[in-house]
Length: 238
Image (cartoon, rainbow, N blue to C red):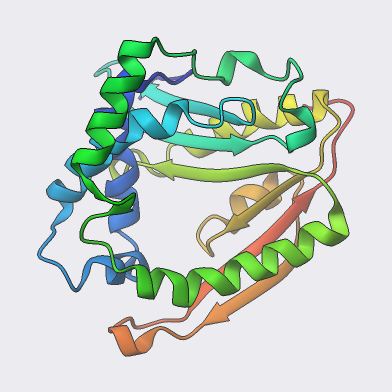
């Protein structure tokens, strides 16, 4: 399939939501967050599509976004989000991947849509107790790593729709992002799943920490494993 890496707009929300949520739904650990509700994938995709425009315009100084489009069908095949360190928020770093400033009318519309599918800012149907039980230890590990490494360019999201996995979509986005991390002289960090670890190692990341958690009481059949990898900036990216 022919693919193209492109910037992201709030108008992409439906396609981004379908790619993201379809990918996450493949993960048995992620599905535990919804096991206590009646929500199925299509409902989750719909809710995400309503929340995303507000998320995409938030923290524009540090957030950067990419999508990959199947140029034959126009479908969004993958989405990734990156975080610049706060020290670079006011610098002209990778502005092509920054969402544009919305109008006041657009901002009001996005807030209204976000509120329609959330409850005091929380995603409806998601189990926040489970999210905290396993998410808080992940945050603690990452904070410890960053205390040692200093400010980093973070690969925050990397998702590919299941129909497009195995076609190099994630690699396309990662290579594009790392060019800009290198230009800015920034060390890159990522928290990767076991399935994604090799993707980052191929691009020069080295493993620095692994955390395995047992969530079998929620019906999963394997440990909940995350890897943290670091990549130093390179002067000449191939």
